[in-house]
Structures are given as C-alpha cells and as structure tokens.
Amino acid sequence: GGEVTGWPDGTTRFAGAIDVRGGAAAGNGGFVEVSGKEHLAYVGTVDANGGQGGQKGTLLLDPGSVEIVGAGGNADSKFLDFSPSNFTYFDVGAPATSTLTASQIVTQLNGSNVIILVPDAPGTLKVSAAVDATGNAGAGNLILSAAGDVTIDAAVNVKAGSSFQVDGANVAVNADVNTLAGSGNTWFKANTGNMAVSANVGNRSNAGSQTQLEALNGSISGAGTISGDVV
Image 1 (spheres, rainbow, N blue to C red):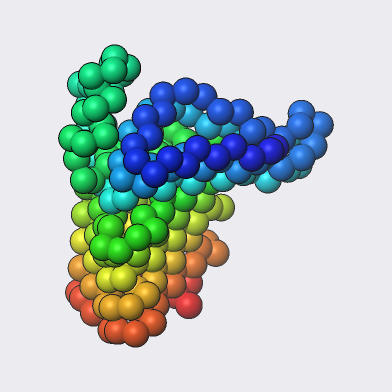
Image 2: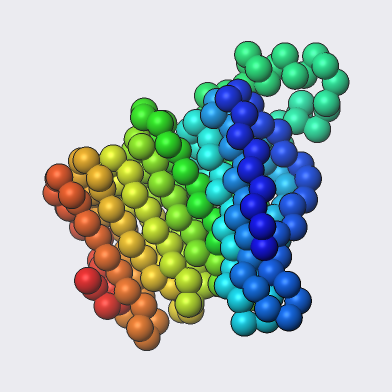
C-alpha cells in the first residue's frame, strides 16, 4: 500500500516504476498521483494490486488537457533525452495537449484502477484510439473526468466486474462503449451542459452490467442504442 505523489506546476516526464502493492498475505493497493499541471508525458508503470483478498489501488494521471491516441502517439522524440536543452523544450515548447496511448491504459488497468483527470477549465479530454481491456487478467476501473468537454471518438471496453466512468462539462459519445461480450459497467455524466450519444453503449448479453447516463443541467440526445441494465 502507501501513497506516492508527483505534482509539479509545470511539466512532468515520468518513465519509471512505482510499487504500492498490498502485502503478500493481505492488504489493499495504495494510491499514486502523477501530475503535470501544464504537460504530462507518462511512459512509466504503477503496480497497485492488492494482496490476497485486498482491493486494487489507484493511479491518478492529472494533466492540463489530454488525448488518448494510438501506438507511438506519446513517443515524443525528445522525451527520453534528459539533456538540459530539452528541459527548456518541455518548459516552454511542450504541446498544450498531453497524450497517453491506449495500450498504456490497457496495461495499467491490470495493475490498478486508473483515473485520468483534467481539473481546470477549459481543459478537455478526448479518446481517439480504442481501449480494450476485456482480455486483461485484472479488472481495473477506468475514470475519465474533465472540467471541460469529454469526447469519445474511439471504442472503450473494460473488463467485466469493472466500470468505465466519464464526466465532463459536455459529453459526446461518438464510438461504441462496453459493447463487447465480457465488458463492464458504464456511467456517463454531463455536469454543466449536454450529452450527445451517436453510438452504442452497453451490451445486453453482459448479465448484471449497468448503464447510466445523466445530464445535470442539460439534455441527452442522439441516435445511439443504450443496452444493459439502464438506470
């Protein structure tokens, strides 16, 4: 267990490994936060698995804005070059939107729950590459949360027994979510605006899986199909 926090006001480049596993005999996994208020470049690993009978811990990734991309999307040519000249690059030249690869997220869900949080408006969160964790051995929960808008442009499927949660100012679901056999629960929430669902959400064949959509101050619209135990 335990807790590890890395929280600079500028840019974070993380390529290491953090272990906050529960004890071998018992105990829950711990909590790790890796943040970059302006920019986050993350290619590391976190093991927050619980001990025998214990629960998984959580990894919180906390960038300014973020896009989930395909293979190579986070392979900034300067990332692994820690020469002094490249520290200047990341301080003043880093892109406004951080990137994480879908494969990183799938791998990380084996070792922890994952929260990707964009805490400050108008920061946004976008899924541009498919995330499929249904084949994982471990069932980690995935939460995508932004003070600005969240856009799902590629399919997301988490393992049965876990959940995929999304909340943002406005939420647009343009790709299928948790429609594969063996996928888990789905919860979407638009905090201040509207939700548009133009794809399929949930799978009726996944016994006991829940699907929940909520717009606190706006409307829910679209031509998508909502399946599962709708609440």
